Image (tube, rainbow, N blue to C red; front, side, top):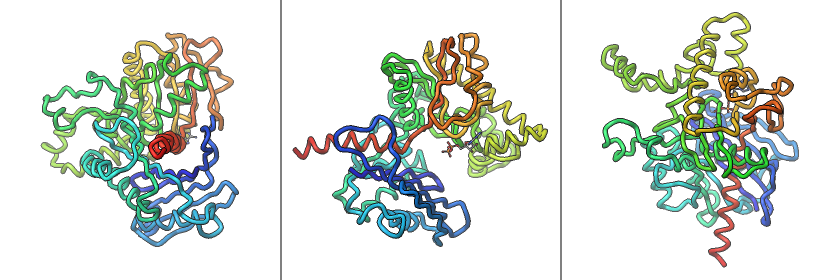
Amino acid sequence: MKILVMNAGSSSQKSCLYELPEAALPEHPPEPLWEAQIDLTHAEGVAEIKVKTAAGVKKTESYPTSSRVEATHHLLETLWTGDTRVIDRPGEIDMVGHRVVHGGEDYRASVFVTAEVKAAIARLAKFAPVHNPVNLEGIETLEQILGSSVPQVAVFDTAFHSTLPPAAYVYPGPYAWLEQGIRRYGFHGTSHGYCAQRAAQLLGRPLADLRLMICHLGNGASLSAVSHGQCVDTTMGFTPLEGLMMGSRSGSVDPGILLYLIRDLGYTPDQVDTMLNRESGLEGVSGVSNDMRLVLEAIAQGNERAKLAIDVYVHRLRSLMGSMLASLGGLEAIVFTAGVGENAPNIWQAACEPFQFLGLRLDPAKLSRNPDDQDIAAADSTVRVLIIHTQEDWAIAQDCWHLSKTLVGVEN
Ligand code: ADP
């Protein structure tokens, strides 16, 4: 069966098409038939579109539009037209899976998209104003192209964290907050969930036997504590702003700072929003970039603020890892994933150093980037340390495949 995955970000759209056997899922992620992305940040009024196929065809195009919907239509047409064509007509797509950022309290697993689900995604846009509307737009675009008979699936970023106990998700504000939906939801759930499954596979043990700390360190960054298959704690909260220092997001700061900025220094809420989301983190402290690679390069050239940015990044990472450890009460493995987590050996070392007292030891021979998932702990380490290449699109396709089996059951 052919499953199209739609993964929409605030200013990007990634898509891929998998061909999966009906009988059983492959153990390892297969290469998609077609992968494509839209970058809307490249230039004003232009969508930068990149497409690549399993057959090795690559195409980059600057498409003149500032409409995401138009760009998405154009992107999807490359599936059945031109030299990137991998299917003859849109009707060959059997199912579509969408990454949806916010599923609120109601959605604890992936579901088929219905009118009710669409209404919930729209309602939850108040909690994820940048993401949920574009996720819904993606669903509606595919309805236009494929008609309503092709099943679409919503895979929620919050769902993996729906097992958080109340002590972890209730904020210690007025109780009314909880009634207003102000609570910890957690994000990056598709990645955390994939990494938990993959860690169990790599360790050759059932997930139910393991306590895992998963460090998703990309542009956005979050940790999760996964105990016996259930997420029991995570660092992102009501919004994806809480927790770790990130590329350009501050992570947790004293809320009193925000009151001071607004009340005493006269900043508007929108200005504070921009500060916290775009002008903070590695970018804000270093003044160099939100890209970890450039900040590390700047340190090598003697840039003191770049060094300070990495020191703060590591300090916060370690202290929140300690917090996840306490929520787990024991640890079989730490997982590093996403752009920084998969590629930055100096961050692995710095993050793990304080946990040496537990008997955690890294293997010096393995401290380099590797295209394969790997265990970088020394043979005698009491805790395994896994580098896992996150596969969010594959996780979405797997959820679609599993749900397709329930559909067959209903039809029979
Ligand atoms: P997103 O959260 O946008 O999906 P990614 O998971 O792709 O982000 O991570 C992007 C970040 O990963 C980049 O901004 C960069 O800082 C970091 N990164 C990528 N490669 C390396 C590397 N070799 N060393 C250090 N950091 C890296």
